[in-house]
Image: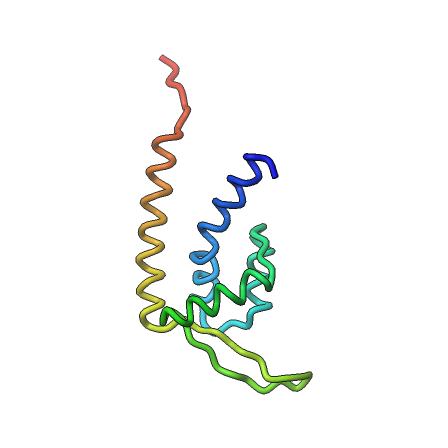
Length: 114
């Protein structure tokens, strides 16, 4: 993996938790729905990455799940943010917006035409 590819992978990994929690902000979601929404946004996440992250977030008290019977197979786990998770997401969003503004400021390469 080239240095650029490695850096891009690290950047994506860094925002993955924030993006996954943002998808969950609208209410209860099934993991395949998260994967689909992420794919639509060009941020690819696979089950092998998603499930451990969901487990970690659940163990941290940021989300919870419930089992729902399925007509076409085994019961499904639907995840939702806890009140603590919602507050955490708000703080993440605020921090993200601040970081984006800082990065924009530092990387602004516009030249003035005087």
